[in-house]
Length: 108
Image 1 (cartoon, rainbow, N blue to C red):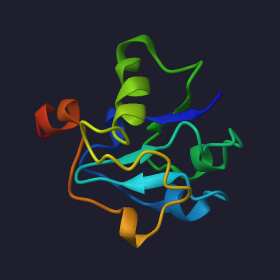
Image 2 (image 1 turned 90 degrees about the horizontal axis):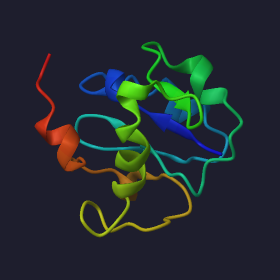
Image 3 (image 1 turned 120 degrees about the vertical axis):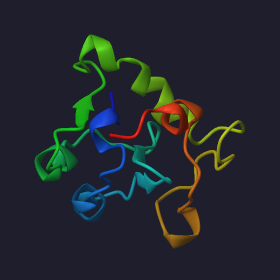
Image 4 (image 1 turned 90 degrees about the vertical axis):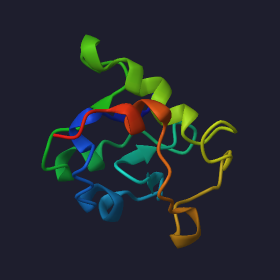
């Protein structure tokens, strides 16, 4: 199990969850934050720090947001950042890139 950041984070990127994460598995993209599914330990601390309720347990993601399970995982793959499993967020793993679905998301 893992947690997933969804569309409520787009263009918000509050960052409180990043600082709260005990394993540094939340990474900064251009328009939103992303949780690395292989690094998340499913502790749920990030959920309580998110001011816009954008973070969900992957088993409890609302049906209309299920695509964000793949979006979070694909962000780290070769078609977006190519980072693979960096082993923890750091300034070196911060980017202005986003998953194509996030890039295409209409600005609010």
